[in-house]
Image (cartoon, rainbow, N blue to C red; front, top):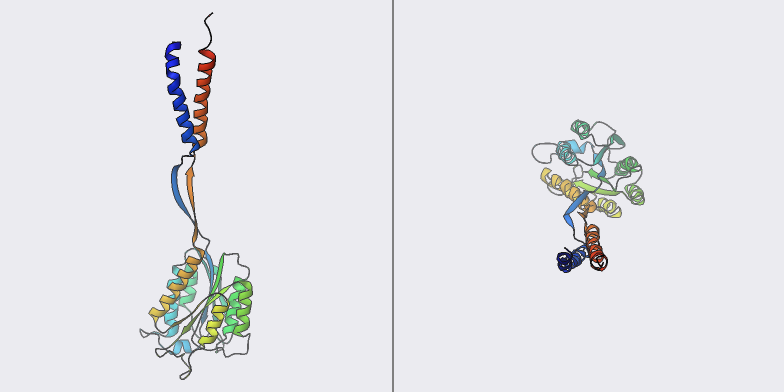
Length: 273
């Protein structure tokens, strides 16, 4: 019996060493990349509903406002993990829907939007300010305003520049969209282009971008691009999930070495009585 065991000891020793080598190499089981979704975006849509938005078509025989409503309804439907709020503005601004995940309720409000909610005019500054109030207490990783207008700021309220300064201080990005006619002009200003310089300043000053759209297709593309920009900005965290049995493998190898030591230096060296 002792002879057989003594012959097996070299094999046991080699096996123990091999197991220890494998354990030290830290083998991994079930390795897989796991994507952790990023937190949602808090978005406030600031929409100009002044009379000019209902007076001029944006293709397809619809008024500008009708076209805008259809586009932003599609945009909202695609933001499943984002809270979205709605502010409309003319001479004054009116917060209609606070930040919500109830996109069906928001869709109903958007579908019923009309031009007679407020005194007429274009208060870009007050539109931004009311949107910022909605976002001020938000803890979302990304907070943005998407402001759409077809005119120039023309009311004695907070200026768009002041509103942009507040947005920048709050680290809220304000994307701006200028709605134009087919000749690149704003309705109601037959010989004057929309105030692209102002809208560009607002966007750039807050870390966002300015867009222009003269058709429903253009407008839909703008909202899609904004959605893509915000998605890529947040992205998601990827980590590798796996188990490492190396410690257990080392333990088994060490156990084999102990057995080898016990058999070779203690039991097998005992002399029969």
